[in-house]
Structures are given as C-alpha cells and as structure tokens.
Image 1 (tube, rainbow, N blue to C red):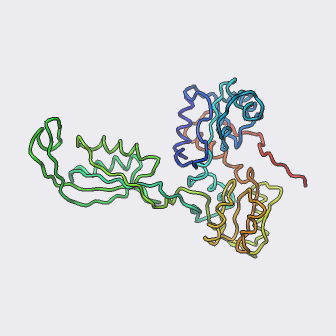
Image 2: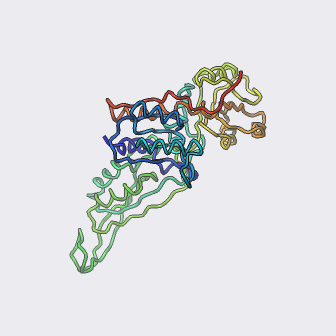
Image 3: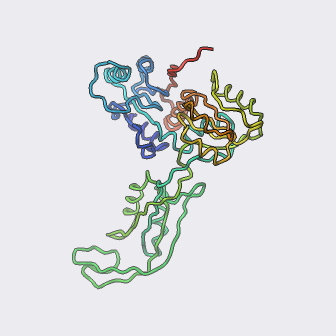
Length: 366
C-alpha cells in the first residue's frame, strides 16, 4: 500500500484546510507514492525518533508537531531539525505532521483529553466561524431527489447531529438556448423556455466545497448548472479550539487535581489559587491554550486545563476560575494514539508502532 493512502485517511479525519494560518501541517518531506513498510506515530520528530523508525523499518513517521515550521536555507546539520531532515532523506523516510487541524476537529486532541478525564456533554470551547457555505441550485422537480441524494453522499447537508438537511422552494426558471447549446429541455437555437423548477439549498463544509460542486455538476442533467455558493458567518459547532464538558459527578478540587496527575502522569501542576471548593465544569486545550482563558471564563468553567501560561497570564484568572497548567507535552501526549486508531481502523494487519521515545524536552527536578 502506498503512503499516500494512509495520509488520505488522516486528512479525512482532520482536513488540512482547518489548520491555523501560521501552521505547517502536511507532508514535511519524502515521496508519498512509495510503498509503506511501516508507520511510527509520535508527538515530536527528533533524532531519536528517526533512529527508532529505522530500527523498526518504518518509512513513514506521523507526528503531531511539525518538524519544519519555516523555510530551511541550507542543510548542514547545525541543529536537530536539519539533522533530522538529512537522516530522513538518507533513509527515504516520509515525515508527516497533523498539528492544529488535529486540534481543531471535534474528535481530535481535545476530545482525547476530555476522554481521559471522563468528561460528558462535551462541546467545542471556541467554535470556528466562516467555515460553512450555503449551496443553492435549481432543477426540475422530478429530478431534485436524485441530485440531493448525490450531494448528501458527498457530504453536504450536515448540521451538527443531523444529516441530509435541505430546504426547497418552487418557482419558474427561464432560458433561451443558442445555436451551440445542447439543452436538456427545449431545442438548440430554439425559443425561450419556461420550466417549473425547485430551488434547493444545502450546507457545505469548507473542506468539501469543491468535491460537492463537482458532484452537483455530475448529478445534474443541465448542460449549464446554475448554482450559488455563499460563505456564511455561522459558527461550525464541530470545529474550533479547546473543549468544555462536565464531570459525571462534582468533585473536590484537590481530588480533581489528583485525577489530572494520575491520568496525565504529570510530576507537577502549575495552578492558580483554588478558588473553587468543588468542580464540575471543565475546559481543556491541548498545548498552548492561554488565548482561550476568556472563553473558558465566559462559559463558566470551574477549571481550565492547558499549558504554557506565562507568569502574568495567571493573574487573568481573576479568582473566577482555576487554571491548571499541566505542561505542553503532558497535555498532548495521547495524540499519537489517535494516529494509531485512524490507521489501524482502515488498514488492518499492517505494521503501525507507537513511538517509545519520550520527546518531552522539559524535565523536573523534584
């Protein structure tokens, strides 16, 4: 099987179009057309991880954090990034990263954190906007059903927990074919036609808009398909940063901090004043999540679990919420499990390994 087939499954789960503008998710280097000999899943790509991939005969490394964030002007091996690139090229290893697109999809990084804590009734903490479109088109009444079925199969018409959503209005469409036309109704170069038509509309997610337009054109009987694709400001409730949910039962705040230490194997938790005696409503964000503190407070979270808070940012809790900074690596360490599950679900009996290298660059002296 080709490496490209594996990457296609990962991008089906977390389309690259949903990565942040500063990010560099996707293929970092290598020939994805080659046959895959094995996959190594990791949080970070380091020299040790490259060696592990070589030992396990893996020519594909999938990571959460991109090795290459900006352009490389030369490759002399002066730092670990360049040395990793050189070693990967020498051993024909493909490097692939799924970073903020993995953060932003509903079942991604933050869902995994929520699962480890046993959170229920989870929703996106800060949903993305401008990621949805409304598609309008027109067709004879007797053909609308089959066209919509094709659109639904292509991924159109999904709103939250509902699928195959659409709306229709009836009206009259007119057109006059010229001498070059091949009309479905009427004659080439004929008179103006007036047809009873149905205007139908469906929601379209950004990553599928081109595929859905192509599906519409293939399924539609008209030579020239009239349609409109309108960008919406609506929030996409299954895309965005962070997640918020509830504990099944209220817990003492210190007991909850102990749960965090146990589940995430953290050696210490940096936290603000324990202004809550008991906690139930929990917000989370894998990696650097300080930008979501205001949203967590606005949504009445008792605790906000994330990483990389700076000294003065802790003051912003303002005695209204408990910030629990558990560390960047610690908050995202289970992301590599998601890669394994995506790949093994689709490709059984295939060599897929969870990296045994602890790539956390931060150590604690206790």
